[in-house]
Image 1 (cartoon, rainbow over the protein chains, first blue to last red):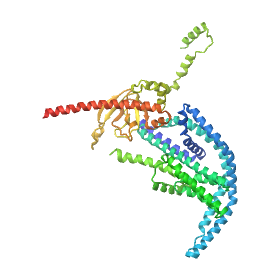
Image 2: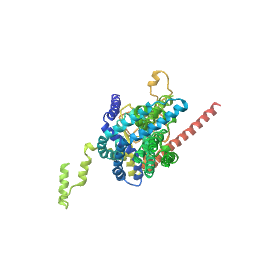
Image 3: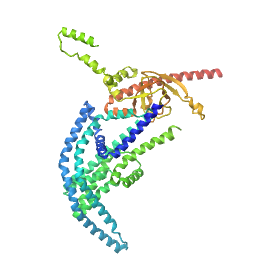
Image 4: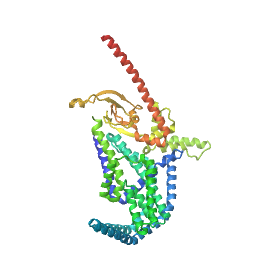
Length: 342
Length: 208
């Protein structure tokens, strides 16, 4: 009996220490989290190779070398473009601000003349001051960010490699610590969580990269400025359910209007976004739908709002996996108290 | 040991391989290291002795053993309770467990303390809980309690799901074995029911 309580105590202690460590050591936990994401994205490819008769280590090695060789070229080619685009944006913002102000005043006059309603200035000023501080903070952090990128470029592939190769062993060792009385339930929830979150991230990664690639290539062909940043923004915001695609269009719409006004160029940009989203909704989404967690639309909307409330855009992106995890745990608790014992 | 080694060496040198290292002896000492008591070897050997797994090849047993979990239970520790949701199928690696069917739950405390009716006890090489791998939300039909310090080898639904991805042939054979167990049990139950029905009809005849 005593040993049993010790086991429970040690196990809870390990879980708590894990969580505390995750939040208190971001320099370690962030690369770990990133490599865990990579692991989730790459893991489905391992059994495909092992089924061909390859050993697991060799399969992992092939996948990692493949990913590294494929990604070296874009990283070397694209990262300077991105940093120069970010630098250019700060010189571009006054132009954008000017244009939006002019438009805003026109709307203000129009509303005043037609309906006698006076639109407040403060929203637009607040929005721009927010944007300016954001861009400045990004620019100020850029050197630090580049330094940490170097660290990450070494750490993340290493960690992902070992996660891919040794995840089984790590999982088994961890499960050995789980006390007997909760083992089966814990293992089941642990597995479901891993599977659902893994599937979700895999599906969203594919979806976001398809949308991002379509939009970037389209914008490059249309010779629009900041095409790579706009494509990246569209890919990242695409992860957010429902409102994501709209959020992705906003910067492109503003830029298009400022640069080209009501012109065929602007129309072409909007059509490009429309086509990308139609491809996403019509072709990509149905293929991946089984891998995207089944949450009720109301739950999705509520968790997106809550996520944005507490963590901004990041919260909107990570809210769905967290909601899915909570749902699983709540279902288990419900079963425990209402179904089995009755 | 060293003497015999020396004499062995002497014999060898007397023959023709004077300076050659005795590989098998080195290997023996290497493996006899008390710190490396690996289960990698012993678990497949244990599984080999289980009757329902006889259609597995050595390599398949090794793969199966890799995805199994070792669980240690102390005396009187509950492995699972009746009506718990189960996801695991267990083999007894060492020790002994009792299978108990709990009766209707009564309100008073004394009856609850009495752990129900004893059904049977299982020893090394026996297995239990196979239905959990087949059913969705399977509820355990009985309580299993370790009667002495017991080591169980368990395989669980998540392991099966992973094996389906990585080694479908191993899962196919495992499920074949489980369906063998289940069908044997079904046959014996059918026979028992037939017998019971026959006895009931006999009793009815007598009563009439």
